[in-house]
Image 1 (cartoon, chains in turn brown, red, purple, orange):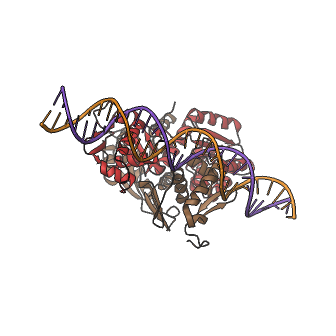
Image 2 (cartoon, protein in one colour):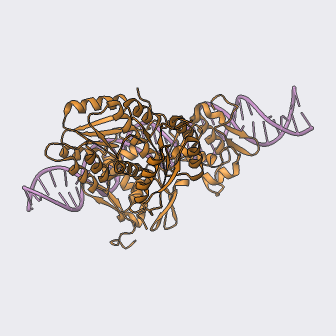
Image 3 (cartoon, chains in turn brown, blue, red, purple):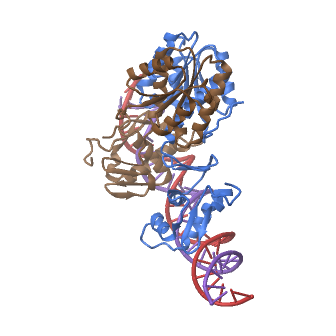
Length: 243
Length: 243
DNA sequence: GCAAGATGTGACAATCGTGTCACCTCGCGA
DNA sequence: TCGCGAGGTGACACGATTGTCACATCTTGC
């Protein structure tokens, strides 16, 4: 129940291809579908924008040399919409000159693939983009064993008792929960809680862990030290009698 | 000069370059630093792994043709570690043949850049990857006009400047944002921020509103008083010159 | 314009949160 | 068994945060 990170329920992901060469669209669609993707096709910018708005695809493949409306204009209009802006975009262009790649990436494209390209590399790059975006879903209120963490209200409950946590402790606990059951490195904790400015003494972390343990009460043993590595929070361990 | 448009990083990003050609490392480092990145350098796989573990960079640039330990082996060892696996990797290789690109991307690389390449394109691709990763973590965020509220990290940004908010101010602002553009009653604020125990003086709210306004800077007028009712936050009002 | 009540504002003391330190304990390898 | 280094623990000083108050200012109805 914990590991929403490990194996997220694989929803079928949809790719919108905006490209006027029908043969190429079919080729790419074939390869994407073979990998289990759903494919939407648009052969010009206007219908591309329409389909994007209507279907909210997981990724948009955008050719720059479109009839009537240039790919850059399509991209600009996508960026205007707060929700469409979230969708990653892979740009393509016929010649794929350096200047063109640079312009595309500057605009905010997630990748730029110069034609011609291998369909296999294309699919792999699509997957590379989605792999990163996938790490998205962070529920605002989630429960692990006896702990309920309500990010919306900046509150945390243990056995239904509210925990009075400091902002620092909140961040710390939040990091432990994000990777519940696995070790979190000292360096990462220092970086994520205090920023990587390096102006915080490493021992400060120990103190805050101690304070956090104190507030965990009988569950304090669930926040275990991993020597030379960091700490691991496991609220469903079977070694302590609390769990 | 390249500029990042969406959300200029609030924290300085660190890039680890693992590459044995010192001249190339210096060139890339120069270009990254010019864009405000922090750069770590490693000239072989072993020290690359060490630095990755010690510093947890935001992105790793990994050359495949390394002395002693091949880049693939470095990548494999990175993937073994649950936390290092989260760091995006951009691979590079001398010739950058198709087969090599495909293998790299199949392994899980986020991008594969064949040498030789333009330093500008390199920097843009680094930024594209980080943008992508950031967008994933920003998914739980709440953006209204110039304000971005990152509940996951208990932080709030206004015009991309981090706001140093107290836990009380965080709750208060959070309530205003939840009902952005509409009035929020004093009684509700008192209840939701301080609990319904009624043991907090009503004037305390005024003081905290004042403090919050102070931190809103030029947008302070967007948090307007509604006499006998409460307050309303409207960050897209058209009366003040800030919006 | 006036009075009454609502809200803004600056100041204050008490409390809390934070980072650091000194000293202690523990685990591990020689 | 010893020594070393990592981590635990309590204490401390400093600054941040908080709730309250007194007084200023504003709004509103008359």
